[in-house]
Image (tube, rainbow, N blue to C red; front, side, top):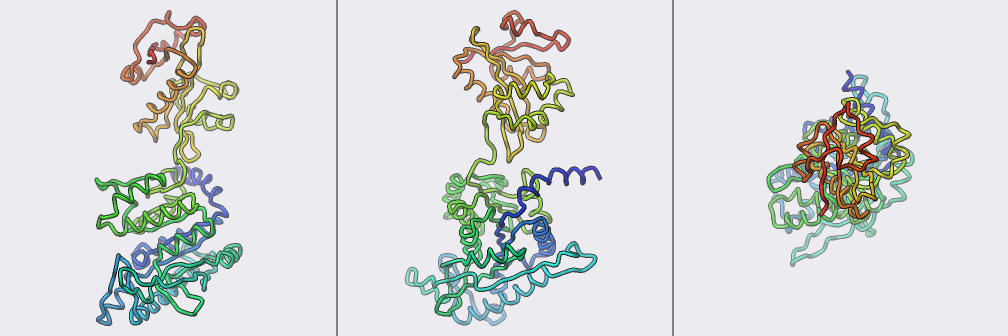
Length: 436
């Protein structure tokens, strides 16, 4: 019970942050026919109920393949893009029409036993995507395969302002009245860019992006994502390439954050949106985690971080007033708005030394090297102040400091102003490090 209550409490900052934000969600055809799609719909409805403006761009590749196979026809591709002849276009329109009706039906459920009871959603689609033919590439005529030419942002925003979920199928229309088969990734990306959406959410068969050893990549700054995309260029991981291309293009077009999550995993969408570390891969323009100097607005976060350690006796107690007065002494590691680590530098310029104090890392983020990052930051600040050494008083982390070049020293070697305040009841050990 308490875990459930705490989860709700911890999700509140995200609920506030996401309200009235625009999310573009890409649902590939595989996700729609997956057994978990009902849960995905429930989670999308929850987002909508919490004030998120939703645009859903869906795909239809497996459904098109099934219709072509039923007719004994073959799919033809060039450069991983479908060549859409007249017969294929008929299958495309059939698949898209049925999928649209299916999605709208799922979003219209209002059964008493359903999580959607009382939601009373409005879903709308239309000719919001203007397309043009892809044309002839390498001598291959793509016929009715097209690309996005323009998104009707004004029309979509009117519906979003009216609390309507907008549904975008993988087709577009030309000013000459032609219909074109489009890639849902292309529609989702262009829509997110032109709407200036806050997030692009891309559903995948994988948990997210994987590295060469098959481990999940939690976060990729956009610049690193471009390098990762180059490594995937000649690989057989087509889905990963397409998703990462969409994310890189969206970030390059001004979308702050793109999330790649699994449509297999129940609750992936909510976990990604309402927990700090999520469960997929985040591709973003800025730094998800940053080291910086503390500001007065950080006092509350610092207190929340160090209080448990003070209660355990690992840190000396500091009042809010003291931290407010000494806030400029602190450096912090901030992760998505949460202060997860801190350290302070108290200089003694006459003795050309400084005290490294209040080094703390949130329990959930230990063993990630953040203590070393802060130590390096404090050393840089000390050198900038022309200090030649650092000292630290510790009761429980002596080995950690010794492994990083600190050596035991006598109390008498401390500046007299600090030595006179030594708490013999705590019996802290004293270590000193010479700065090169």
